[in-house]
Length: 201
Ligand SMILES: [Mg+2]
Ligand SMILES: [Zn+2]
Image 1 (cartoon, rainbow, N blue to C red):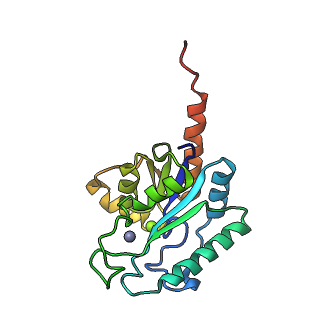
Image 2: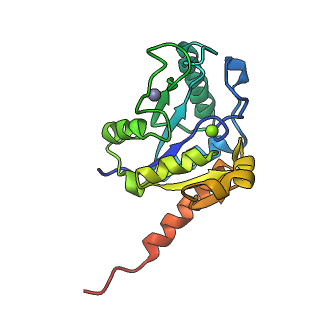
């Protein structure tokens, strides 16, 4: 396991939180997101999106829309010189809709099925990785695999932080204004680490 990743939530972290992105025209990147992901690319971090899309199970949109939206997302990022190394989504819900989408799956965050898939595919060290998201659930999710967790105040972030943080089982390692702020913090952490001198022999 040689690579390090930053696991990125999608809605409210990369794009505007609109409830459910049930049409391609409702997908809009948040400010500074292209810049943030480009920075990760330049510093050798794998940028991996992990997103719950229970709108499929709920019957709000077809699974094919997720693929269309992800194509749009990658196109918009490309224009900013940024790319994603993986995109993983869960279309399920444990008790809404019809099978196969209605199921108690292992991939719906905070379950870790999708991270495990990414770890295998991209040869990742999850414990040396970070996760960025706008919900308390994203924090819990990161800590389950030993990754550090950053809450962003975009999307549901501000409300989550203000009204729910006392109830969270785990606290974020950092709270950032947005994705760009979160990435800057990660890079600062890592540059401090590399400045620590090696222990004497
Ligand atoms: Mg989100
Ligand atoms: Zn799932």
